Length: 116
Image 1 (cartoon, rainbow, N blue to C red):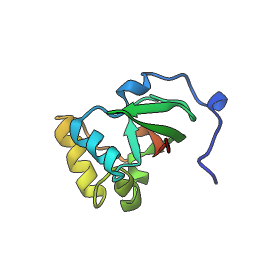
Image 2 (image 1 turned 180 degrees about the vertical axis):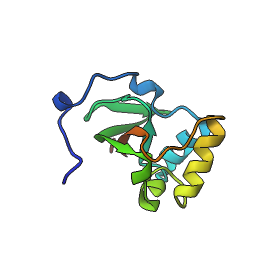
Image 3 (image 1 turned 90 degrees about the vertical axis):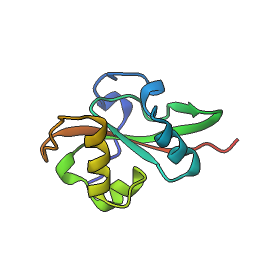
């Protein structure tokens, strides 16, 4: 089953693309190509929308819902981490007191650099 869906099939955005990647270490990971996706508790971008970080542009190629229990080490690598445990520890350090529940849904935003 493909995760690709159309913007018209997605619920309304809950935030703006400018808030998709904001932590300085995440910005650097995106700029270096280490990070090609970000997971948020809401939908921050439409497919085809452009994110700009430090003068570089990235296009959102896919947006879909996923549970934390579905995360694999490959997904963690998209986020710039070695494995799920590293990603989980990072998220929990950013959000103290947040439970890590396998059934908790997040929105995945996959992107790639736009060639200038």
